[in-house]
Image 1: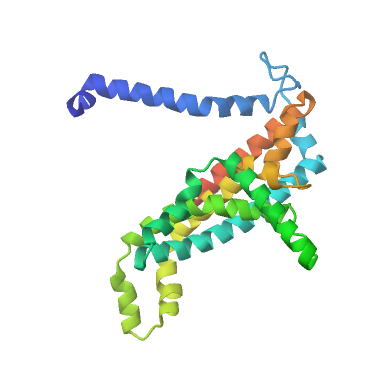
Image 2: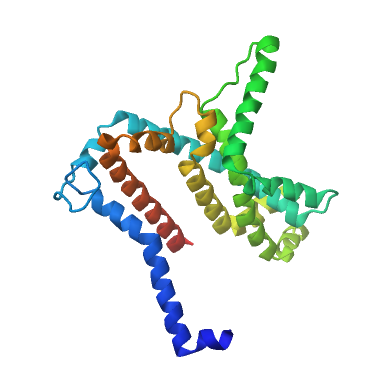
Length: 270
C-alpha cells in the first residue's frame, strides 16, 4: 500500500482526492459569499445583480445585533471557565496520581459521546428540579437564561480544553518545575510563573476552540435559553422566513471571515 501511494499514479490519485475534498468543504462557503452580494431575496441562480444592501440592513437589525452580543458574552464567559477548569483538570491528570484517576478522566471526557439534544434535555430537567427545591425553601429562582447556557457550554467545552492542554503538559519536562522548586519557589509560584507561561500556546488554542463551540452551539441552548436568544437560535428562526434569509447569509459571511482572521492571527502569533 505504501509503494502504491508513493508511485506517480498514486500521488496523482491522492492529489485529485485532496482537490475534491477541498472543493467539497469550501465550495458551499464560496457560494454563501456570492449570494451575500446578490440583489435578490431569492437564493437562486442566475444572480439578480450586485449589491451590498444586505450588509447595510443587518447593521440596523437590533434583534440580530442583540443575539450576537448574547452569544459573544456566553462564549467569552464559558470559554474562560472551561479553560480554567481544563488547566486544573489537565494538571491533575498528568502530574498527579490518585485513586479513581481513570474513572475521573472518563467522566470529564464523557460529554464528547453524549448527544447534545440528550444533554440539553437533561440540563432542562436538572434546572427545573433545582427550582422546585429552592423556591419553596429559600425563595430563590434559578431559572433559565444566559447563566444556564454558560453552565451547559462549560460542560461540553471542558473535554476539548483538556484534550488540547493535557498533551502539551505531557510534553513539558518536569525538570524545569523541579529546578524552580529547588531555587525556593513554592508549588503555587512554580505553577503560575513556570508552568502556565509554557502552556500559553495550548491555552490560547483551547480558548479559541471553546469559544467557537459555544458561539455556534444550538441544541443545548434551544432547551435552556428561556427568554434569551443567541445567534444560532435567531439564525435558525430566520432561515425559515425567506424575507430575512439574505441578511442571515451576510452576517454568516462576516462571522466566517472574523473566525478565519482570528485563527490565522493566532497561528501567526504562536
